[in-house]
Each structure stands twice: as structure tokens, then as C-alpha cells.
Image (cartoon, rainbow over all chains, first blue to last red; front, side, top):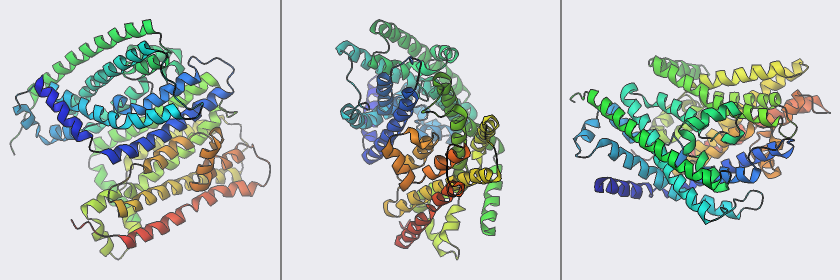
Length: 267
Length: 260
């Protein structure tokens, strides 16, 4: 466990160095947030039906999405790992006296954490002080906030577990682009990043609720805005835990089985 | 011009060497805007309209912008990946050759896998056109053509500006994404649904408004007045590329090699 902790710490420090890149990212995300809010605002303006999620809740949803983009994006990738697999340098990794799954998991986790830590503060801070209706309100009460933090962190752990499958699939396909696109597009759609899940048609919502993707983004954000009641949120935490354990177990199994078949050629 | 087509042919052949990878990427490129379009469709299914615009009207707008974007990504990709030319020092070689730098950089890379994106937007375009009650005339058809061409030129202009920045910063700048990806994302809806300041920036500074909003109103028969004026607005938007080209020339003169 100590090894993984130090991998985490080292990678965090490395990630924190790219400050100007993060600043540019923040600017882009602001623009993105504004555009999406305005589109939804225009949709809501002349509507005759009561939408299943209020505009205020939606705006919170969008700002949280922008602030924690690194926690929820599947295409956020580590090219180093892809190179390791396709170039054959994986042999070095296999020599390490640590479990490969845990080692990579810690590395990926740290990358996402450092990237989000750099970016979320400026976005959240400004989002709180924006003029109405673009501002982001504080959570309803302390319990909601605590639940939000728990679900967000569990969501992050879950997302890293999902993204591990992406790297494992490269062992079989040897080209990261195909699986990245496939994973990225479906995963993002069902996590509610293109349109929030409550706004999808009912039949699609049913699909989204079964898949694990929504527990990474849609669920914590709606807990924050109060769209999901606290009692439901507590049940959700257990579902998140269940998914997490299952995916970790499956991922480890899959990695071990592909590693058994790896043939490293000399050179 | 013939040199440009030679570049095109060579790079096409080289990409076709990896045929499976080419098709896989093309299929993937098909699905990226597809999921965005699906989102748009579901929103209209729920709300019915957006500030008075109907689904097929917005679909037409979406198709035009995405067509323009994928065409410019396909053919002007050289400028998008320009920073790698500078970092590796390969730009020095470009400068020694007796041809214009513009042409050579443009020809340095083509992304033919964008055919997937192109196909997707073409399908949306045809679907939208088939369902819109528009009385077609030659003028309107030409306007549509102008819209797409003008969009390609604007995106290319933005790529050139971003590439020119590399002369000073060496690294590519992520901020340029606001205007390429962000511009695409924003311009897929008619401009007047946004706040005034956004609409203004994207009409007068980066002229997406002359591509999607004004001529779109004309095609859909929402305007009264001089037809020729509306038809020509995309042409006015295309002028955007001229200052971009000039800035590029200044950048080239300012260039100092990284020496690698």
C-alpha cells in the first residue's frame, strides 16, 4: 500500500507543474460552460411543459461538470501507458515488484486528481460570484455537501476503474484510438455529459441507469443541486461501492489474463 | 495548385497503407458528432423549439457548420499541427524551398479520416433539407454553397492565427480551442439564441454570424429585403482569412529557429 501511496504522491507533484496549460484549460471550460448554459436557457425560455430538472439545478450541473472535467472525462488519457504497451517496454513494468493493476491505478488516479485540483478552484470560485442567473448556488446544507464530496470521490475511483479497461483493451487491439473513441463517445453520452440524464427520453434514461457511467458524473452533480434526495443519495453510495468493487475485480482479472498471453520479443 | 494536389495524393496513399486503422478512425469520427446530434434531437423531442426555431432549421445550421469544420480539419490540418514543425525544427527546411510557406504547411498534413464526420454531417444536411418546406431557387442553393465555403475559410483562418502564435510561443496554445472547437459548438445553433455579447463577438470579430445566422434566415424565408445582400453575407465572412494570411506572413518573417 505504501508503494501505491508514493506513486500517487509523485505523480501528483508532476501533474501540478503544468500550471499555464491548466490556465488555458480553465479559459476554454468557462467558454464551454457559458455556451451550454445559454443553449439550455434558450430551450427553457418558451417551453410550455415543466422540465424534469430546473434551470437553476441545470446551471449547477454544468458548472460542476466544467470544474471537475478531469474527474469525468474518459478521453483524458495517459499516452505513456499506451506507448509502454505498443512498444514492448511493458517488459520493464512487469519486472517491478508491485502489482501492475495497483501501480497503474494509482498513476491514473493521481493524474486526474492533480489536473482537477489545479482547475476546479478558479472555475468554482468565479462560478459562485457570477451575476444571476449564471451563478452557482451553495449546497442546501452541510449534509448535502458531505454527501456530494463522498459521491464525487467514489465517482472518481469508479471512473479510473472504468478507464483501466481502456488500457487493457490495447493489449488486444494494439491501437488505442479505436477503443478510446468507442469508450469515450458511449461513456460520455451515458454519463450525461452531452445532455443531462433527466432530459433524455425515458427509454434512454432506463439504459443510462443500468450502465455504470452515470455514477461517475450525473449522480454526484445531482446530489449537490438537491435534485436527488438525501435518502436516495445514501442508497446511491452503496450502489457506487458495489460497482467499484465489481469493476476492480473484473479489471484485475482481465489484466492478469492478458498479461499471461503477452509475449515480449527481444530487441 | 498542382503542387497542392500532389501533396494531397501522396498523403492519401500513405494513410491508405494502414487501411484498417483508417476505416476504424473514420467510423469513430462518424460517431463523435453523431452523439452530439443525438443530444440535440432529444432536446427538441422534449422542448419542441428553441427561441422559435424548429428542429429541422437548427439541424440545417448544425449540418452546415459541421461540414465546414470537418472540411477545414481535413484540408487545413497542417496548420493545426504546426507547433510540431517548429519544435522539431522542420520549419527551417520549409523556408529554404522555393515555394510559398503557406502552401507547404497546408500540404504537410491531411486528415482523411474526417470523411466519417463529413458523411455524418452530409446525412444530417440531406435529412434537414428534405424536411424543410423551403421553396428552392438557384439563389438559395448558391447561398447554401457559399455558407459552407465561407465556414471552411473561417475555420482555416483560425487555424492559421493559432499557428502564427507558435512563432512566438513555440508551443501550441490551448486557448485556440475556444475558437475552433468552441466556435463549432456555438455555431451549431443559430446565433440569436445567445446573449447579445456572444452574438456580437461571433459576428464582428470572428464572423460565424455571416455563415450561420444571416444567410440561414434568408434560406428559411424569414427575411424581408434585399436578397442579394443576404446571399453575399457569407462572402463578407470569407474576407476574414485575408488578415489571417497577412498575420501569418508577419509571423514567418519574425521566425527564429529553435535550432534543433
